[in-house]
Amino acid sequence: MKIVFLYPPSPYLNHSMFKHYTYFAETIEIISRKYKDVCALDCAVEMKSRNEIYEKFRDADFLITMIEPYNIRIATELMEVCKSISKSSKTIVYGTAATLIPNYLSTYDSIDYVIANGEFAEGIFQILHHVADDPDKILFPRSSVKERRWGCSLDSCAPLERYKRWGKGMFEFTVQVGCPFNCTFCSEKVLFRQSEDFIYAQRPVNESIAILKRIKDEYDSVYFSATTFTYDREWVLELCRRMTEENCVIPWRSDTRVDCLDVELVQGMREAGLKQLSLGIESLEDDVLRRVNKRQTSSEIMETIQMCKENGVGVKALLILGIPGQTAEDVFHTQKMVEELGIPYRWKEYSPIRELHYKDLQECDVSRELDKFSRNTFLASSIKGLSTEQYMDLLFPKGYIR
Image 1 (cartoon, one colour):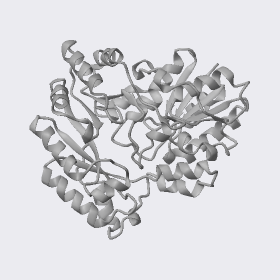
Image 2: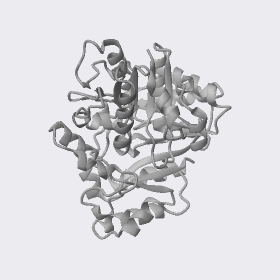
Image 3: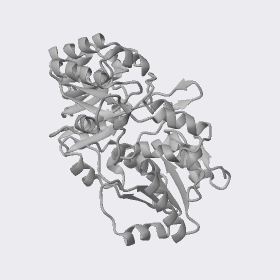
Image 4: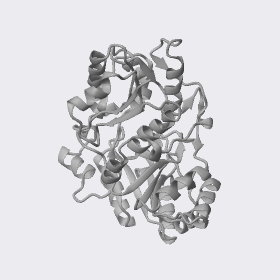
């Protein structure tokens, strides 16, 4: 059985390579444990000729495409090409877009199966094992993520040297999936949810240490991909202790919330090589925080940032631009307060992820909504009193470094 994994082309790359390492390469590695004829086409990081792509498609039994809201159109075009070259090929889509809008994607003739949650590898295995018995386009994997198989991108056929180059020597790997919190702008509750229960799992410490030992002499730094890295404080403390004891300390960074930090955690992470902790602050306006169900206040945020600074840990503020109801006054006041704290920060545009998902659940036509996720256009008009120029200056400040 020949299996081709495809990451569709993108007009340009983000600073982070985490979806290439985690969603793509780690998934490939898990599938490769059982199926040996597997190849990877990551057309977002390396240019491929038309002949190279078509040759991979020609004898493919399965084309498995990692699909995001911003690459749906090019992904479906390539799947149509695959179908035209090989009528017997089956196509599978997974990723954020597949989870958000499975009903819409199932309307495409070029798509045979949609994996409709974040258990990508489990969904792919179910299809490959039972394709003849399950004709439905939308597949909801039944197995619990608490028993998930963790992948290791180092053992995949993905172009890791390209990731290393574009990621400026930073190795990124998943240590946590799911989130116990319910911020309204986040996709985790859609990706990792069964009925009314949230799904949350962390990579075993032993596996994390084994990966660190393999890469510590090859990479300059590490990003632990996590929704709320410090939610399980005992797991964090054990990981940091093992990193120190087993000589695999490497400069690293991750993301968390201010209400999941304390002095002991901060000190333990600093001693294990933590260089920067990105904090999901979103805004320093209390009414905005309430609207997105952040469950924290601006005073709590500022107190925690000060605590981190006093304990020698660099922090970075992650802010959202375009939250419904947010005004220019809100934006500039938040920016002023963050700058007074003396920490780096970055704005990211608000994406109506939940709104899109709910419309798809109601089987509405969401095709026009997809333009809101384009990497070539931005929703400057969504913030009252903010010009397009001001909006773009906030999103892309001169000299920005991740």
